[in-house]
Image (tube, rainbow, N blue to C red):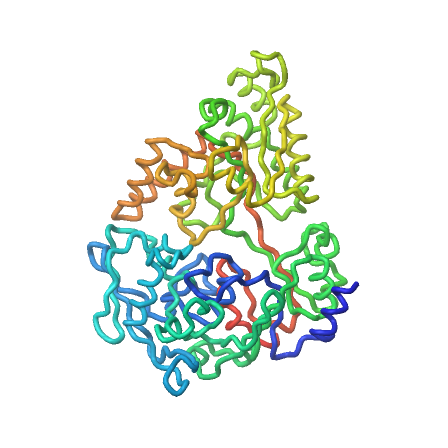
Amino acid sequence: MKRIGIALLLFGTACAAATYRRPLERVASMDPIHASAVYDSRAVSLVYEPLLEVDYEARPYRLKSGACDLPEVSTNRLVYTFRLRDGVRFQDDPCFPDGRGREATAEDVVFSLTRLRDPANASSGMWTMDYVDKVEAVDARTVTITLKKPFHVFPWLTALSYSAVVPHEAVEKYGTSFGQHAVGTGPYRLTEWWRNYRMVFARDAAWRGWAALRNPAPYDKIEYVVVTDPSTQWLMFLGKEVDGLGGIDRNNWDAVVGKDGKLVPSLAAQGVRLFSAPTLQVMYVGFNMDDPLLGKNKKLRQALNCAFDAPAWKRFLNDRVEPSDGPLPPGVDGRLETPFAYAFNVEKAKKLLAEAGFPEGVDPKTGKRLVIPIALGRADQGAREEVELLQGFYDRVGIKLEPQFMTWAAYLKAVSDGHTTLFMLGWVGDYPDAENFLQLFHSKNCSPGANHGNYRNPEFDKCYDEAMAATTPEARQAAWTRAQEIVREDCPWIFLYFPKAYSILWNHVGNYHLTDFPYGTEKYLRAGK
């Protein structure tokens, strides 16, 4: 009750029409090159602009201009020419002479990307520059980026907040505290930051983009409040202290969504709207392929996939997921749509177990049930319920899962060091291309890289490399198809599910769309239907 009382005192009983409020996790830094978490990028992208932007309304996703127009690409696919748009200006700040902001230049783009790729800055986004050979200013508004070799998804990387244009004056003036300031070219300015409490952004009426948006009533303020407890968030939403929730807690599901999958009538009558959409996310249980048992026994891995009861898991998660049929979620360019051969099938799981050398789940060497440890990075009630459900699935085929609960830090280290047998993780796509997901299986990315299970298959690597070198979409698709077929047959993961996104908003928020790329999208919202 005390926490709720504080929230009521601070935020009042209703949201002002010109202020959009929502809960957000703690933001660590407003420095674009350190915006590694989703919530960091959300805050950064209100103030800063990357070179390009993901179109807010287009489905399937596509890129549009950001600080720069869409680039021209050379015939050899190595040189990208970006041109800054008219009116891209840094906001007023004491770092500039007389405190007046100035127009951004090509040299600012060069400075920002050079800073991003500098190892001394230890940016979590430095990988976005791995394919870049050089960045050069051609004239005051033109930049060329030359790649070391063709990389067909490179433009998507320039839409990440890491590529945002920053002024050298601010970096020089604020030094190590630059991440506490925000001096960008974007639609909002950071006006208040009570760390771990709230952030307030005020609309910059001088931003060049408002006219193009044709939004008659943009929000004058965006306010992020740090409230991580789902129960408190829910009560704040009901009290109209926040305008929306970006997710629905499992414990509140029945109060929001009826058995028909629609918003419950009582909330609809009050003016609440429910939004739902697929996501670019995949959840999985990874096999440590260096494990002497699992790594060498493909039949066993296939059996474990067949024993995973996807329909029961979907019911457990309130139908908020779709069963996974491979490594690529719906909406990803290049996704394989054929049926997965090792989808839930108990009888097939038992047959494969016998072929793997473990009839009825019994290890013939010991005469006892096969015991397989599974590492988990949290020990809360939700994690315990999930692993109990998994244990039930594998009990059916005679296998005993043995949970190993760890702190998140210890868990990540154990996975990275290869000290697990099974581990549960997820992947959120940075862009909607097969490459972003299939990189998780290339041998060059073995742990501590994103290939945490240390899967190695030369045939897969060959297909992946062919796709990356392909000069036509048809050749690339053929290579991606074969790569997915190999992974689905090898089963280096137990393919769990693809999460669906849900959000709820009060109906005075207009022009809202669920998106996998919510960075800076508050500028599109309309205060009023």
